[in-house]
Length: 258
Image (cartoon, rainbow, N blue to C red; front, side):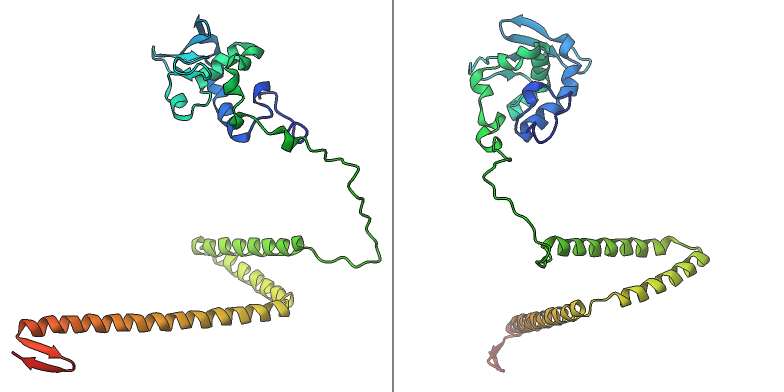
């Protein structure tokens, strides 16, 4: 990774060449950990006490080898119990130990795949001499690439967004002279757009819009028929309830009085 982008001097060496989620998690806690480095107390062999970052008298115990599992560190804070990743208290302990801080953690914990990048994927030789060299010939026509099409669509979208912003601002402008001048300017822009219209694109857009409109009308007619049938069944049920309550039974399209 260092061959692609240079690391900042603020990033400790043990956080370089690490997966992004792990490095980001630790870097977010470095600022808080730097304020706690001077308060770290070595109480026993690989057991440290770090006070809370606030003004309370509470402190947390950081163990390089936890009581339950000697191959994993531990801390009493909520952050460690939630993520099982180095918290600000553990980062403060690691920073206070200098270059040897990261190596003081259990080897099995440091070797977890989540903390390390697969070197077989990153150490590819990008300057291989086996790659054939391709030379362009000026006599051959160059086909338009998809990048040009995407650039056109991007600028079309930006222009539409700018027009939408202008339209929203028109509701909040009360200067008549400014509005008249804007209208004259926009009228000129409308003529410019008409002169730059690609007729092939406009015809294709018209056909597509007409096709979509036709499909929507088909869907609408089907939905209308379904809703009509549902309303008819609902009215017939209501009619049956009313007639049955009066002792009149509906048979087919006729009535039977009981």
